[in-house]
Structure formats: C-alpha cells, structure tokens
Image (cartoon, rainbow, N blue to C red; front, side, top):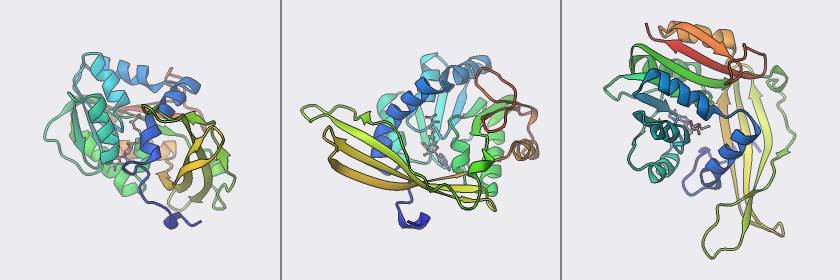
Length: 267
Ligand SMILES: C[S@@+](CC[C@H](N)C(=O)[O-])C[C@H]1O[C@@H](n2cnc3c(N)ncnc32)[C@H](O)[C@@H]1O
C-alpha cells in the first residue's frame, strides 16, 4: 500500500488510536523510561506557568496541574483534546498548530513531550515551532523537548517492510459489553532520506477473545527525524542559548540511537 492510500489523520475522531492512546502510553511508561517525573520536575523548577505543545490527551499537563502548577495545553487534534478536556475539565486547552499559534502571553516553561515535535514533517514547520515557542517564553524561560535519535539502519530508502505486532491490550471496559482486545501492528515503513521523513502504516484492530476482528482501522504515522547537530543549530537559529542534551530522563549523556532530550533557554 502506498503512503497516500490510507487515512491521513493519525488521530481520527472515534478511532481506536485515540481511544487506546492512554492505555498504550501507560504501558510505554512501565516498559521504558517514564517521562512524567522528568517533566514534572522541570515544571517545579520553573515555578510555572507551563505550556505543553502537542499535549494530546493531557497526561503530562494533567500531572503538572496535579502538582499545583499552572499549565495549559495546545494540540492540533480535536479528538485528542476532547479526551484531555474530559479528564481535566478545569485546565485551559487550546486547539492549534504548534508551528503557527499566538496565545498572546508568555510562560516560564514550554515543553513538547513524547516526540510531538517530530510530527512536524518539514524543516520549515519545525523551525516555525521553535520560533513560536521562543516568543511564548519569558526572558530566562526554558524550552524542554524529547525526540528519538535516528537509528540510521532504519532510515534507508528501502524502508522496513517487516510487520511488528505488539502484545494485545485489553480494551477499556464498556458496561455490559463483552471483553474485547486491541491488536496494533506496525505494517510497513517508508523512509525518505532526502526530507528525513518516515511514514509508518499502523493497523488498529478490535478483536474478541477468540481472535475475531470486530473493527479494523489503518492509518499513517508521519514523522521527521532530526540529527543532533541539526537540532542544536535549529535551536540556536531560533535564539535559544545554554543548550543541553541528554539521552535519558535520568540525565545520561548524549547517545546514538537513544533519546535526544533537549533543554534550552531564552536569554
Ligand atoms: C505522541 S503524541 C504526544 C502527546 C502528549 N505530549 C503525551 O506525552 O502523551 C503527539 C501529539 O502531537 C500532536 N500534534 C501533531 N502535530 C501537531 C501540530 N502541528 N500542532 C499541535 N499538535 C500537534 C498530536 O495531535 C498528538 O496529540
């Protein structure tokens, strides 16, 4: 299947991806490093207010609010924001594009957790996002974000056509409904080293205990990989100083094919 043949939105309304996002993010927190204590600590040090770009279902902003720190979230996807609003009705949620927004005020900290920045798939969008973040920071305020450092074996033009199946997830229970499971399969992946973009075909299936497929959704996850020297340069061009990169939320030094976790300050 070609990248254009499937649904263009990775977060469609009423879709299995949005419905299962928190479930998967929770599993990710348990299997890998948990980003929430790190961003919570960044928020505490800043004293707030905090702006989360690409806030999704609000799991990070919500945890910051629970610490008593003022926080707002902005996301492009109305279905993801609807979940954030349902979970945290008292917080301020903005629908908007992180590369083109103006909230008319400034924050002590801007964060972009869980690789949201990589969902901007062109250099122009990524640079515009850094410029918007800079403009929304007070002097001395900081931008903190995390990316996946590209593993160059998976960036070649021939892509990775192997399918990867994740474990079955129990679906969120619905009163009176039979128990169903969610099967997620990464079907194929196209890489474009020219633009540093990869397009991943994901399949979401709701299945019964016997394996019968009740519902099947296909969509593309499009991201742009960023090399560390490029990221440093983009941050500098946007006006940021005191750049710091680490490879884990615990503070390990930069490492190839791990995470790129960046902290930068507006002078
Ligand atoms: C991987 S999720 C991360 C969500 C949240 N930060 C978390 O840690 O759970 C990436 C989010 O970025 C949002 N996003 C993608 N492109 C965006 C854009 N141009 N402007 C604002 N949000 C965007 C998506 O809708 C999605 O909710």
